[in-house]
Structure formats: C-alpha cells, structure tokens
Image 1 (cartoon, rainbow, N blue to C red):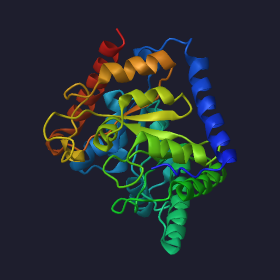
Image 2 (image 1 turned 30 degrees about the horizontal axis):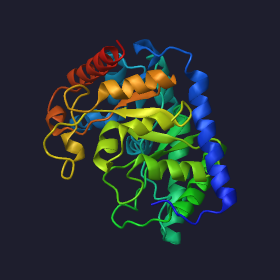
Image 3 (image 1 turned 180 degrees about the vertical axis):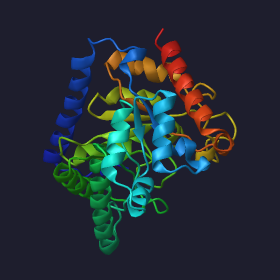
Length: 313
C-alpha cells in the first residue's frame, strides 16, 4: 500500500513523473505500431530444461530467427568459470545479428537486512559487469529476498532502487523493476511503479510480464499508464483457465495465444500509446522442456508473431 503520509513535495514530484511518463506515450502516439515494430527476444528459461550451455542457447535463438536474447546470469557466469571468453560470447551473438536486451539475475538489493543488502549490491555489480561484457544494457531487478513477508516500506525500496540505478549508470546497465506476481511485495503494477517513480531517477523503468500481471492481480488497463520509457521489455507468455489465479504457478505458463490472457487488449493498448517494448518469450513449462529446444524456440516465436499480428489487425 502506498504511504498516505507523503510530503507535499514528494507528492508533487511523483505527479510530475507520472505526467512525464504519460507525455512520453503521447509523443509516440502518432507513430503507428505494427507487428514489425517489435523486437522478438528469447528468454532462456523457455529452454532451460534442455540443459544447454550458453553458446548452445545462443545458437538456438539465432537459428530460430529471434532478434535478441535474454540470458540468465548464472549461465554467463558458468561460461566464464569454465574458461570461456565473454568476448567470444559477444561476437557470437553479433554474428547472428542479435542483441542482448535484458538478463535475469536475483541480487537481493531490496531487502531490509543491511548485511544481506550490501551483499546484494555487490552481486548486482558482478551481474552488471557480466552483462556489459556480452553487450547487454539491461538487468531484471525483481524483489528477490522480499517475497514471503508483506509490508515492505515502498519509500525505502525506492531509495534502494535509486542506489541500484546509480550503480547501473557506472556499469552502463539499467536495472528494471520486475513485477513479481507471486511475491508478497512489488507483486502489482501499482506498487512497482510507485517504487520506480519515487526513486526520482531518469533511468527508472519496469519489466512487465503477462503471467505476473495476472498472478498479482494487476489490471491490464494499467498498461495505459506506462509509456515507452517506463516499459522497455515485456515478458511474453500466456496462462490457462486452470489452475485458478490463486494456485497457478510459473510452470503453468503456456505459449502466447494458447491461454486466456487478453492479448488483443494488451497490444491494442501498446498501439494506442505508440509503445513497442521488446517482447521476450519467458516460459517455465516442464512439458516444453521435454521437447526439442529448437522446436520449442521456433514454435514460441511463431506464436508470438501470430498473437501480435492478430491483435493489431
């Protein structure tokens, strides 16, 4: 819940930031958004169960036809630990004509415990360095470590996010507040957006996700408050009618278009605002993990493009 005892100065600052976000959307609204406007990205969780190494994952994404990738930090770190050169990773990605639009890490930058938080910032620095070395410019910043006990002070979270953003400036990697629907904190668009706004930093932004918006109970109409700067990367997936919202889990995510998510509303909203975030396919479906990785990657890309095309007719 947002603190009702905000100072007048802070209220004005938040209002101004909200207006700025809306203005960005308005400035873009005259530019038509269509299927070709989007960068299609593969989040490597989608083929995680096939237990490929980093270079093999890059090959899958490149040969399947993706524009970009969203790797997991542990895979980058494992590659480096085994003696692999990150410069070779960067070159391989470039050879396929792809980019690194984001990366997934779990540094505990947001927690209340000071000792643990300091370790979290050290980990974030390491993560950002790994990402930068392979050409990446963004990092997911979920509320890792603050998931079980509700009541996280959002103003303090905003101060910590600002510190993370300042670190990102130095490392040339932008941390994105990730909405985590299953978490006890930052599980909605509104709480996550508050932290981003209250950070008072120009690089503040959100990492959206179809499944997490549903799981946390966010309204998809809230996307209207997110301009092109606020929402740069959007995790694509879908969710079935069963199990219900209360018990659905990551592993129940399905290909875009195979569930009940309001895809037409999502993309018509993007089109109205002139917003075209990177669309990163993020799935954890154990059935898909048992299948051929290339087949899963190609199917996911085809289904993403079909959903976008049908939604924007």
